Length: 413
Image (cartoon, rainbow, N blue to C red):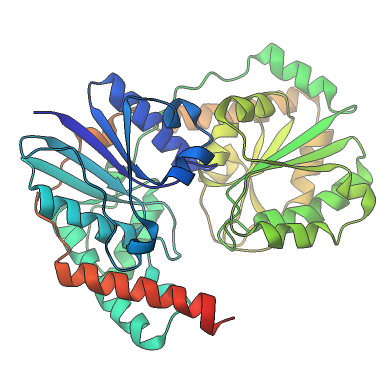
């Protein structure tokens, strides 16, 4: 009998979810679990986490992307009925596809959790996808409602943030437990910069002020990057020692590049798109920069080491903020924020003592807020081993997904 973690998430590029999974897989191995990663050769090749992609103890099994459109393409898993399995999925369509494994292998214990990573959008609410035929949109909505009810009944729903659970509960009127008890715990140990290091960074600000914005290029969810370019142009015109590093990649890169071309040559010369960085490179950039602008997991990564981090509003092409980490109280917000320029100007011009105070406040807030428990999800149990998605559900899921793809690639074109 083995304890097995199955990660039903193909890509491990730049992002908060990816960093969480990176640590989870390594910690699961240390705890004596087998780790199976459902992925594809291209995803393994492009992973920024080489200690996962090159780790021979992490079993990579490859699904077939072309067959995925038909609800097929499942890889064979080396698990037995006696095994105790925990599987995690972060996309509703992928969760339904993954239910095939619970039916096929019928293990002694097989907990499959759907983990919310966004407030809204196709990952959690595929019926909201605009680019789909109206008939299939209705079918998708019915399926989403059905799956949501079953997730609630079997206690198979978790989230990164309490608000994600609240939104999901309100959307489907589920009456679920929306406390932090059902939220993932911090799985990374952080070592904040010392006061001496912070004072040195504060002293450098008149000569060099580097700003980091790290995010997956997934618009409009993380489209604050587009608005940040204009805001940075204004900041750089007034404070020429500033430089902006944009870390990440994704399907929306073309939109970002188009906006970049509208800036002055002076501003463009002070902006660097680094592409994806591995974890060590990103940590080094954070430690050597003076401020960050981000949201979700990337904001946590910068603020928790005591880098003054402004929390950006998500799902908007403007760059609005709720202040620094300890002021925003959350890394995921959608209510109206404030213009970011005054906050950037404040952290550039404030006294050295105030800079250190702001930096430490963000780190202290996060370290005190979220419990450190890297194996949290492996200790959780749902109330049913049986799949909540039927063969018909998997078929409907596949048809809706494939017709939406056809709409995007053919009809919309």
